[in-house]
Image (cartoon, rainbow, N blue to C red):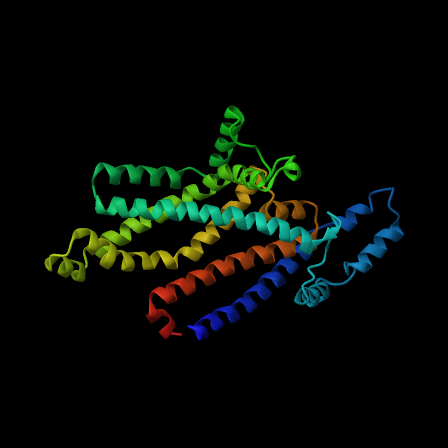
Length: 322
């Protein structure tokens, strides 16, 4: 298992290098830039702009800039955000944490609801319960996240039950520890539900399909023929094999959640990595764009890594093939 994990960790390095290099190349092809826009500001002298260009190596070719960035990133320094005028590491850490919280709780909500519903629908195939679950899945897959986010904002504005935008209230620093936890949780509810909705539908359908296929297997028929209770047959024999494919798609579900988080964050004003990336790109803060994309990729890779480890732990044949 240790060798399997080490190989998966080593696979991360070329992926991150390739993503960062490609992002640098694409940003270099984008016309204009934050410092170039400062030239149009009459309050900033041309000498100041030239000094800033030289300081952050923007006066050099993109591949030279990339080498400087790579050298500093290897030492834990991801550069300086010229838009926000603070180190990019400090800025990304806070936004990355917000995106992580949003994706984590959306994952927990989606899986904790979808897996039991999928099992319930499979066990009660063609019943009213199964049809109700199918309707929930159809709605979840059909309604775009953009529309769900807008409807959630309208609901929050109409009822006043939930805050609109932000990760905390304006009086957050004055609150006690328990009040701060409640305040953060209160701000998380709507973005988490919106983000988890479509993912929940897909996982539920996959769980139902896997369990139905497994219940038709010969070893399940043999277990029933031995007179074992139906609940024991389902949860002890069939469920483990039915849930293995879900572990495989866990990484893909995290990728979907991250891409959905970019949409949800920008519509619902959640201060996460997706919103930061859009703001940085709009301001042509190229260094911050690269950092944000690399961090988002790292989150995605970690999700796939966790999925691989879970699958290898559940099914030893996976790690024996490595």
